[in-house]
Image (cartoon, rainbow, N blue to C red; front, side, top):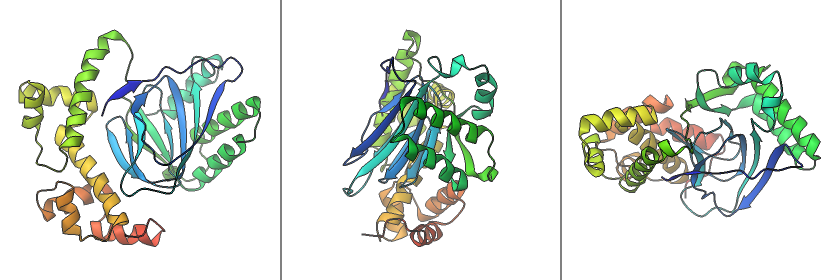
Length: 294
């Protein structure tokens, strides 16, 4: 997937960008920018990409993405009724850097150099209340709500499990020295997605980029934060999670459709990433109101 550097236009009369998205599907390019971003999915399902991570998302998904992290939400599967989201963007240099408290808050927010924070439980309810209020708030009111959201995330009065760090804080810089390296990685990720359902190996990926397998493995892990085979299995498991809750296909058929060589390998990779078997995941997701099989 191509990573686009998005230059955010300055807003002289507002410190916070507040966007209401209402479209048929999420189909934006994988992109990065200098702002901290808060995204709340109000309707829609698909795959969420943040730097080296890929996970399924559905209605209620709430994520804080660190500045300069590549991210996108992509609708997958049958056409959906709508794809709606509320998005808040706060540029550090324009707003937060002027606050003397921000340096310590920033360190706590991205502790462990995570690329994003997935918010769940009671904390998600508290934050989405602020986001809903921003729809009709003044520009100054939006800034107040945005700062309140950051305060909630850094001094969480709810269960610690309400915040889950996501991935590493890889930076997609717009500097010229990073452009060639980024383009090579973009080509590789596009090729990986196109061949996901076929056998894939680090040796094949190295041949695609015309480098040695050893050099490729070192460079990929340095750029993405994990070995190539782990990234491929992450992507396959995420696709399988969607298939399990959006179709009534047998587990073995889903495993084959998602590129797993054997059913035992599928069970191993799936359980390692989700903590449960594919069958148990499907039962639990459907019992919680996920999309019914079609």
